[in-house]
Image 1 (cartoon, rainbow, N blue to C red):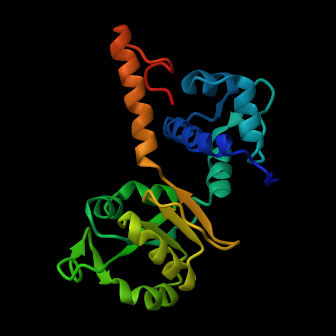
Image 2 (image 1 turned 135 degrees about the vertical axis):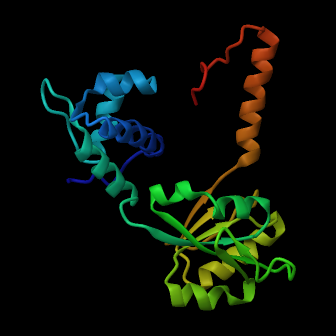
Length: 224
């Protein structure tokens, strides 16, 4: 596969949508799908579909479309979901426990192997088959287990020092579920999940729908 390096963020965010549709097609033993079929299911334009899939190095065949299994493999390879990557969750509160127990991550190449916290009442507990360790053991275990991803679900004030500890321990990527904006050195990847911003979008769309009383949002039902 001739992988294209410079891919836009919107394209990257659409790739899991293609993957979901294509995997269902593969389960039905569908050999090929057209850009028009994918566009209809995902409410996109066919030309956008062709551009997005070209970004992962695949193209359709005349009168046949895209080979389903080849595109699935190409997207998984592009996203790094064809190989399971271990991760630590820091913060064994409700959100951290929920993320640690989400089995769907395995489908996307992510495997949470342990949790960390500084609360004595949580340390030593088993959560979804994973132990909660004291934060003091983070560096040692990160080095021994060669873990490079940290998922932060700690309070906002704790996020910067925890992120620094993770970086000093060899963590290369941080999935930040806290409101804190982290400053990290070059070579460390941070993806921040802004739950408040997402809720604000949802609430504003709901308010607009309620005010109009027409039962629809501007983006249409189910669209993002």
